[in-house]
Length: 114
Length: 113
Image (cartoon, rainbow over all chains, first blue to last red):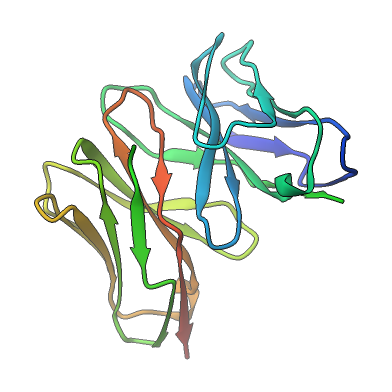
């Protein structure tokens, strides 16, 4: 049971480049989400999904796209990278029962946009 | 929407002392309050959580208290050890059918031997 797996762990992009951050989970969780972590600001929700084919925006969605074609995978796409998107990105998944439960995080992707 | 404030931003204690981290939330509909620990360069991991129908929960040296009337909750760590050094995040979730975690800004705890 690998849990939540993110790739890559580190990435450097030039301004204007695009890329996809990968996230996969093997816990059969319906709920998946992407957060970004910036110094002094905690973690902020970018996009989330409540199941395959269903996605929605979080607190800071601009500049990012997501899709959810399978229960296991939830990739995050940066359309045209900007220095303001330099951050650490975490994917998370959780069980979709009646009561809120633990969110399991991936190991993170440290992205630098130059 | 929900807003979570967390204090202090840094906390230094001697090994064996207690540490208290406090959070306030704004949305009275929030009903789940997890605490995450993040070691340097690692992912956040849940250490304890509390639901709105409970006032206090303990797990060995860690406890969390919730005051729904005042809309604040606190993390208490007793007999601190150097391995407790990390950043701690509180969070709140309104009962919206999805875990839209709203995090506090974090507390960096340093436990000195």
